[in-house]
Amino acid sequence: MNNSFLRVSIWVYLVIFFLYLLGPLVIMSVTAFNSSAFPRMTPWECLTFQWFGELFQDQRILNGIKNSLIIGAGTVVLSVAMGLAGALMLTQIWPKLRATYYTIIIAPILIPGVVLGISTLVFWDRINRMLGLGADSVLSNGIFLTVIGQSTFIASYCMLVLVARLQRYDIALTEAALDLGASHAQAFRKILLPFMRPAIASAAVLAFLASFENYNTTTFTFGGYPTLTIELAQKVRYGITPSISALAFIIVALTVFFALLNEAKLKRQELVAAARKQATVEELAGKIKLPSFFAGNMAAVLLVVFAVATITVVGTATAYDPGQCIANVKEQKQLEAEQRIQELRKQREEQRLRREEERKQRFEGVFEPGDLQPGSTEEEAEPDTGTNNSGFGNVFAPNALGGDSDEGEAEPETPPAGNGGFGGAFDPNSLQSDD
Image 1 (cartoon, rainbow, N blue to C red):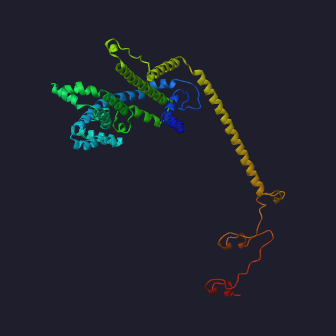
Image 2: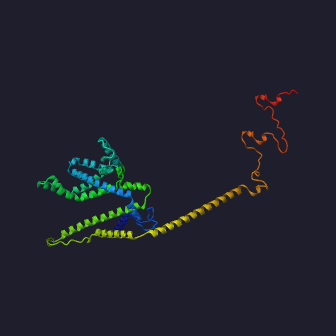
Image 3: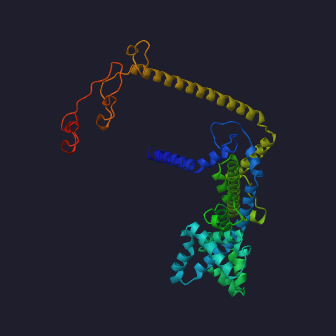
């Protein structure tokens, strides 16, 4: 019971892990075949191959791929050479200095790519000025600076791969070759180099892939030669299109193809070695019957299936015409857009009627029908409270000054005695008339 539960748990974990790892790649690859202008998987519209055609017509993408291939080739040569030299130095250096040397040679991996790009640009610009060269010299060329900048840390990766292989090398083979009269160059070329060939191939592939996908260092050194990652980053700023999904699908397909090809080749070598090891003396004297290419080689079977599927897709792309399907989808989108417009108009009309109804209800709540007399207006119906709430102590009240009225003149108001200022000196009653 425990073994079954453990087995099921492992399978569930593997499924979740590969979904997390490969799910985005699968989804992005599927979006390359959807006719939607924005890369999406749902809702599915029409099966189309037009995004691949637009990809191959995009000159910026093609130019970026060309620059990436050139820079990748230069980075492979320089990084593998430096990595091999560093690995040989690490195995032959004095043991007490080996740890220090290893730390120094690994340090570029720990430095951020932005720092490496800026330092490469500044350093070679200073060298260019010291030599009195112009801005169009080789030292200011974008391809040269990018190769140098990327090789500063990719060489460390290559060294790690080569050191792992070199640790299994028997130094006695080189010593025997030297004892037999071979020079150091001959011993290196005929004994050590063939032994290191698989590791060199692995380091070269690693260096090329690291160079092809690098962005942090390249963004400061590319100059007038933008790579594919630089072009993609610039295009994404203005909106992503399914042509980028088509490029992603091509990269994924090529990666799967070469991975299956390498696995099939390695499996074939293992089967041949096992057949030769198990062969009898008679078989060795005669002709050994080697296993076929597909016998016990699942990678070879998958490779053939993948090749057949690719040929089928290409054949379908040349014969399939999605024009009618795309026209139907456009017509359906137009109908849906008109329907949404009608719904919006209806909602706006309902909102307008609702606002008018609310305004009418507020008006009827303030002015009741019985508050207005026949023949009167709203201004005349306002009640007169007989009080004046104006400021300045009612100085500017309408009744503060005497004037004509319909009922006759108002009686003068007798001012109170002694209310004048300055002790009543200016009181009208304080002066005697001549009479």
